[in-house]
Image 1: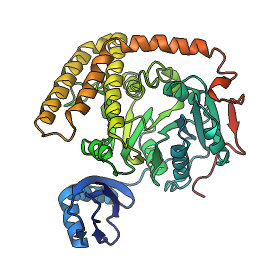
Image 2: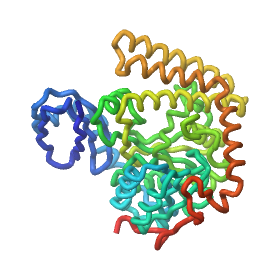
Image 3: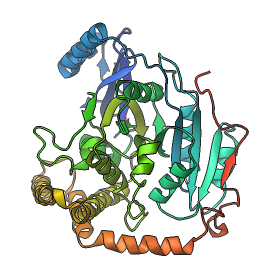
Image 4: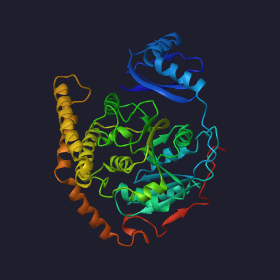
Length: 437
């Protein structure tokens, strides 16, 4: 049974909410002057009604302290006014999902301008990764403000690195094709940059686009992609109270919504193309680049206003595979980093020990009926982790080398087998847009 997602702006009169007989409850996104400040899910009886007084009590109970702190911050702390904004390239890497991509591109047309202005260059770049047909290219033709590149080498990090080569912006913001950008997405990213001009990377809040199926609800009840509603600046090699930092790179954010200074990303060598390789190893690339940013001595900033809504897996089997891929990708990243970063090996050993204990504890809770996930989901993630430790990364390195040999001239001429045309970059009418005008 679905949850209805409701947005409430606390500076406006509170609404009356009616729960239909088909709904399990509500999921509330709370905003203050447009800023997201809290999110919760609540089971409610069918056909129930929440009055403004009911909502006021719930807001006070669930988010009162956060709301009060936001009001005080808004009154006492002046807004940072930068002297200039960096040029920005928004990158969407996609493969054979034009229906998702269209929705993502439409959301970028509806962005609100930051209070202190917009970047001089704002370009949107779609990287079509080893497509099986021309649907994505044909879709991009209908968005004249969007540029198109075909990257024939299959693998998400091949596509991300192709964008790194082609982009013109000083900042590169990577979006997954199955997200839509919140109207304040650009304002959130620019505020994070204005407050942290020395930061090399930025991540943002990821909330559910819908909660319509059992799989989506289970995933979000477990925490989803959420990392909280407080600004966080990660910097340095140690973090008080986090003895596994920075090795537990999942704390930094999600690859569905991340941005980097292009010059730093180039300096670090881009994304590791042996991670995020598709079905054999569908993950780990975001964890790896977050970790390398911190280990190289650069700040990484988490900004909740830099918000997207993600299309969670609708089917239970697809969610089970996602948990398996998370375990696999995480441990592939761990095993790679263990070999390449000898200074952190003691911390990685503790991380592996902690992770398996945590998964086994969750499995025990699930078997006793005290966990939101069924045992099969937890076992899938656990088994993925085991496979990730059993030399999956070295195997992936060999696969990646075979792909490079298969497409030796891809940077010059995309391969026809995967549906790419000879244009390396199709810039349709113009390369930058004023999305807010």
